Image (cartoon, rainbow, N blue to C red):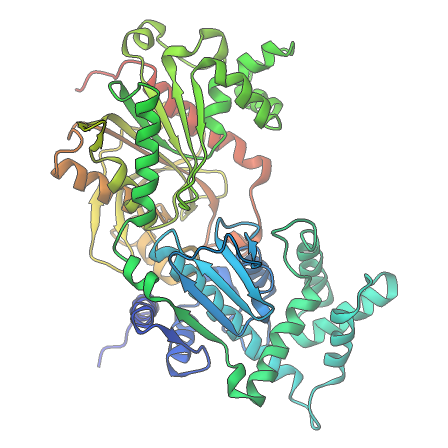
Length: 566
């Protein structure tokens, strides 16, 4: 029998994880300590995601991966032995506390100290993301349990010290804190410095705001204590439930349909439905700041820096003020009420004035006055949610007893992605999308060129891999995609789903086959380099240049006449 390569084994493991997860959703429940849960854990260990670092090493607790997960899961998840995933529950009139994780737009409710309910509104990708995090936490909990219970007579002395540190009310300081971190480092198998670094990272958000996490002492203690309780009573076994409403929702665009309906009504009520519309998938600040930032600074009596990126640094802390100023020049903001977690901005370029644009922005004002394009900026989608929202947005709708067809002229997607040949801050232009875990591939006629960007800036052009989730990145698979004939330059989560919806809309005649598509990504990490994964931290100010460079290129493509086709 031919031996499989590492990348082939990893691809098989990812496919196995997805297949088991899909089956468990249909089944309605599973226990991580049961046979199905163990199979999930085996496949996760086999493809060994880069973001989870040393998860597969039984001697060491993966602290950086733990920080990453805790920032993206609701407070108290480490204590729970009952987790419910549902599609639509009305908790508005209950005493359940709504909790939003620090770095993930995710709706969850604390039902009790040991029960949390997730309301899934963003599709299968969100489910996979939650299940991988739960599986990771259970694997790490088992490690902690094996470390603290390997002594005769029950738990070790370090565990009792940790219990004291985790349960006392006042903050530890000085020598007491050093001793507690040292005891914890013995339990997790890490050095004092590594343990202290994770302690300080989690402490920055601990009890600071409503979406905070618990501190490291409490998290590690709760993870170990949960396994101790499970060994004493099967009634305390962690169980994950998938409600019938969730099962019925999969494959249907319930939240996306309501979201698209709200957006179309907003455009219609503004009288913009007969104008050419340019859709931009991006963050909620860059297009607004680049379009109105210079005008706002002039209005408050400040000089406008010659350098575009310096100007952005001047206005980025005045979000509400820029919103208020821009409202007088064709800007409107639509807060999402569909539970899709995707806000929308509308910019009517006909209502803008030349003095609002930064002098470095190239603009044909005669063309702008003649065409009067509308820019529809939508917030980032999450994985397969990208298909759902575009599939609904690009189709006609019925308003005032008539069919309204929106004239979509261009679709511009700016994303945050992992780079394979470069480093953080580099830019990638997609020529195709390779869908991980499927045989689906999509060629892209990308209306972007290296010459459109700042001269000398590192830009990589080639296919992008659309992965199942940030937690399902494997170095061997990504290396294979990069070095083989695929010649992939990056990995992302939404582009392939956007292109799938665009292709479907063209086939159905909802949009023109001549619609301009533009895909550009800035690199947030390089999963092929140790210490450069998403778990290593955010980009901070280093993200300003690539983000606003891409935004500038998108804007200049929209407000200037298209170049003749050769």
